Amino acid sequence: MSKNKLYLFILVACSSGYIYLLYNLYCSKSNQFSVCMIKNFAGFSCPSCGTTRAVQLLFKGDFTASFLTNPFGIIVSSFMLFLPIWIVFDVLLKKQSFYTFYNKMESILKQKYIAIPLIILVVLNWMWNINKGL
Image 1 (tube, one colour):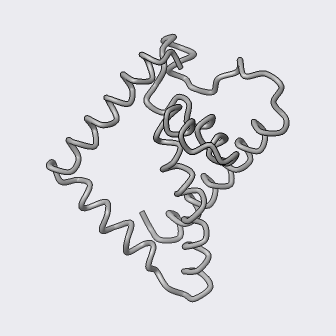
Image 2 (cartoon, helix red, strand yellow):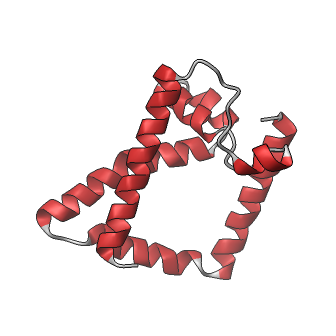
């Protein structure tokens, strides 16, 4: 993926995440609506179910409840906070430090001894979500 496409994709994803988070924090009156296709179709939670609630709890300062709802919320919150800043920094200074970092991380994550434990963690989180009844 080219640098410009990657930067645009991340900025759009983060903006969409902020809009969805703000909607859920301030406009949504009901928590019955789920955007999770797996949960809506199959009837059970996916590995990322509860991430929005976890981000909301983190936004409200409840780190423990956020982690217990879904640890992915902390990761997503970190990405949503730091990646747009990093990208704007790169664009303004005409650098590509994030793009270089992204490519390096992509090659590292493709290695089996890294990818397999991460996949196991995702599956364990999925089982935990199902067990919690998210």
